[in-house]
Image (tube, rainbow, N blue to C red):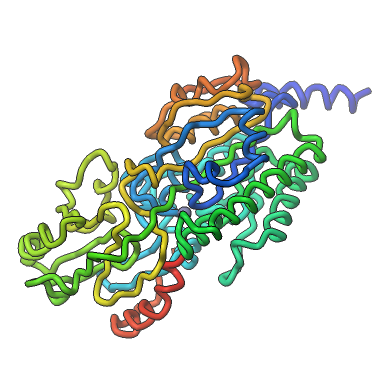
Length: 445
Ligand SMILES: [Zn+2]
């Protein structure tokens, strides 16, 4: 009797202490990203499982990613609802303009200071409000944020095969186990395709179409496992991506080294050979000279001083952005000292280009059925995730109003409105190493 009273009292006080908690009615949420899934990849391949999901839930005509359309930056926009210039993860690569050190995608995943610079990803916000979260391979998973980290995480080893279908199914099984046995509320799940195949063979290739069939089979398997796990009525599923993919044009290429009057001796630092984007730090007194030499050097190359970069990109107003920025028109990549980029597909381009647009699909108890919604910007996804989880968002750049029409009248939750330093290295071995591994890190993400 005393024990029962004690439990009752504990339950009552718990209810008062956590005002947002909706008890057993809170829906779980699974956010899935298939890297580099262009908005129209399902239009030239049979995708029965994606079609069924659209009939059962909501499909956006397409989603516009943030600029630059690179993997880590765009995923961090999904997790924070902020543009790149506000969340600070402005590139896939960690770099230091003073030492010249640049680190590739995988290494950068482990450098907390690159990720943790003011904007809190939704995992941490959810945990602070009493939820249990997990993440499998999602960009940003490995980092710590204000000394906190995702409760359950799987981080891939350095030479991970991002394309293996059996691995994908294992990841799905792990997520289901975390939802059921561990009672997690929110999991992010990342797959490295169809990005890798799009880079290697091009977005119009047979290989890319076959990879979309693999993605579709995986979505079928995922939804089957959700049903088998008894989660169908209690789990909202969102399937989205970070950016699209463009066929690389191999004629009239942009090769900085060949431009007349340009010399790398005028630079203190450059981040080039990474698709269509470039960051430059001219030597003292050389900014105007380098700018004027590059400005009209190639009809497909755009060169800006940091403060003059177009505001619509929401990109340049951050301390990590260098005094000069370059980007090129769709299809054209920027070559630096040497030609080391050989991909047939690339991204990183203007987010207004249709081939950079990506997908957004959702199904579950909170979503309407068979609804196709107008395109929207990915910066708005974060507010939706917070609404679905019933948590109060951090300050962000999006709005729940954009995605609210997708939701049924009652979502079951109350609405809430709106590292370690790298080793110092000399530049020469670094550049050699850069040239050697560029084929690798330029090839994916
Ligand atoms: Zn990507």
